[in-house]
Structure formats: C-alpha cells, structure tokens
Image (cartoon, rainbow, N blue to C red; front, side, top):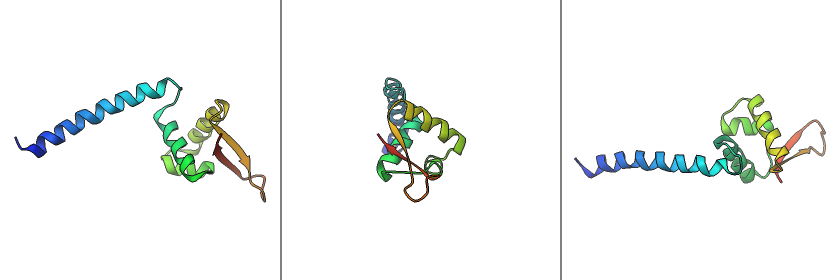
Length: 94
C-alpha cells in the first residue's frame, strides 16, 4: 500500500474524530454547528443582514430567523436598525 493511500485513509479517521470532539465541545455552551458558522460569519463581516447570513451558511431565511432569535435571547447577538431605513435590520455580535 502506498503512503498516499494510507494518508488518505487516516485523514478520514482524523476528520471524523475531530468532528465528534467539536460537537461535544459545542454542546456545553449550547451551540450547534450551523450556529457556530453563523457567529463566525457575523464576526468576520462585523454586521450582516438576515439574507447575507442565509446565503453565507446555506440555509433558508426562516431557519436563520429562528437561529438568530435564539442567539439574541442567549446574549450572543444583537439586532440593530439601519440609520436611514428603520425597516433594515443588521445583526452584530454582542
């Protein structure tokens, strides 16, 4: 068996093990994997609209609305209205 084949097989094992550890780590603060991806996206961009979050994490807008609401209730995110248009809502980290 070549070294490349062995490395590819081991990569899959390591990737699954890291994924299992990450999910266990996220359970403590109550995050799911998608919520963590959303927080990372918002942190990078400083502020996002719901549509930008939905596109960035590849989810529908209803799911993003529920996710953002739960993170706002937990104190991780804030909703801010636009200055020129109060109908526009931006999501930022708390």
